[in-house]
Length: 116
View 1: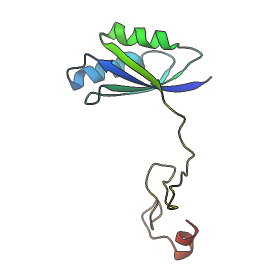
View 2: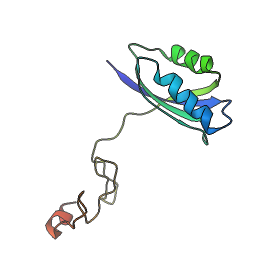
View 3: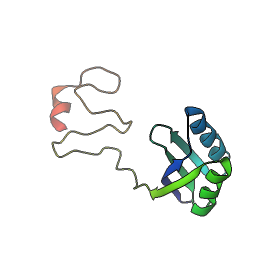
View 4: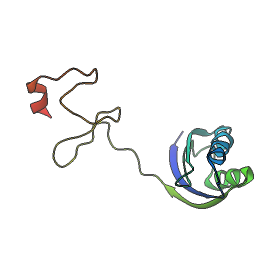
């Protein structure tokens, strides 16, 4: 199983209910693992098993729901869980920014902070 994530530009959405309709419709496809549709940007982010669902099939599914696919881009793989910025700061694996506090909110020791 090879999971890929596509960023899809979708035309024809006029409201947030349209985004929800697309999410429900694509979510019913067996190979789709996750789908997020943003009405404001007219973008859908779809993660699916490309061994079970092809890109043309995904496009046809969007069109069958009643919308137009304006473009598709393969999303690059996610960075490692602890990505680092040039200044040495980074993000925790849960998406939160590293700071002088640990995940439970209590301050870290000065030794732990120096190791960052």
